[in-house]
Image (tube, rainbow, N blue to C red; front, side, top):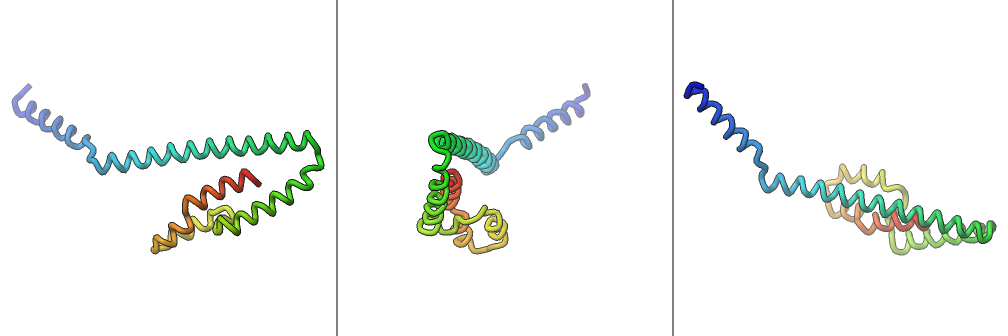
Length: 130
């Protein structure tokens, strides 16, 4: 191997080592995305488990008395509506139009109010309850 080739090879290796290093801000950004993805997965699994529990409870009620749903469904809907209007204003609907609208809003206080954790929690609980 000629000396100039060895020098080029050494420079190439040093360049690859420098370019492969991640900065602290890059690691923080990557870690934030991974933690967010894991958290969304855990919440989705919990949501599915709660929905399964609600379906089993409904099945037990139907086995007990098939006509009990004539009372439970309207009462549950009225209670869910009352909870939404009283404690979780803004939790009506799917939330998809609100999310799309907040992409075009510059005022972050409005975005935080529309897309809050309280509203997300209410949507999950009220969906499983209803």
